Length: 380
Image 1 (cartoon, rainbow, N blue to C red):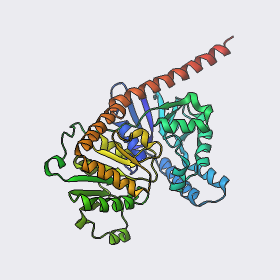
Image 2 (image 1 turned 30 degrees about the horizontal axis):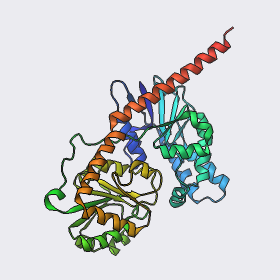
Image 3 (image 1 turned 90 degrees about the horizontal axis):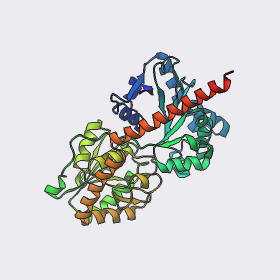
Image 4 (image 1 turned 180 degrees about the vertical axis):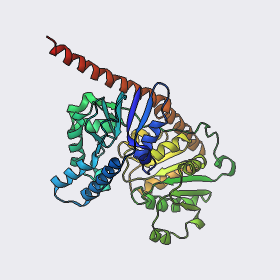
């Protein structure tokens, strides 16, 4: 089966979790399932520029109707008319391709998040997102949603789309060599890892305060931070290294994976996330997880199974859960094993590819069935 992804090779090299999903889909290609990219063109580049401009304008525009029209314009992406030739279907994440391709179209997203997610991000409102699904959902042959939680929330607001919704987790490509041991098992130093480009949105200030409290009791503690820190923030936290905290600027993906191989705990007390892909990658590297408790994160990182969930901003709760895992190394090791096992059950590429193939064949069969029905009804 030949699947066209709504992204070019040049766009694929950009930053962001949404593009990571496209990259992981590409890496699922095999003889049965082949993913293809769009050719680059000046028209595609020009339209991408217009889309980004609309997205920026939508963040600052007050009249609801105008803001929503800008959001719609920011989600539409022109698909070259010849691009889908010889393809079996088109798969597009977040952006909706227009005009509608002649082959089945699957629109991928995270579903609808809780209202406080959009309030915290400040770019969207819940009403904006519902409008997009009501506008684009009927035009797609199927909707690919990454979590059960996101799908339930979507159907609460758009029950008319139920027949089109398919839940398939995000594929995460783990290293071929499993992490059999952690450095802490040799030197006794528990290593924490935080990865988040926006330090405030991802909860780094709360983690630093919790870390300081926990380290008074457990001096054999280290924290690695990968973030985009401003100069002002770095000045305010200039003595971090002396307290066992190493701050890195955004690193190449392989370097981040190297930190995950060494880390015992991946800590992300985030205020806004719809998947936390970096935390899933950490599970693949046998990291226990401490993460915020708003949907869909408890579905992806079950509390007391792969680690703990904690309310955003709850520094005391963060301190308590860190203390439990550092004080009880056997529990920490069990969570690490559970994390790796859950990754294999939910996000392993072979499992996700199998689910994708089922959805793709189902969508194609349904489209062919409708076409045959139309021909039969029109026959003399």
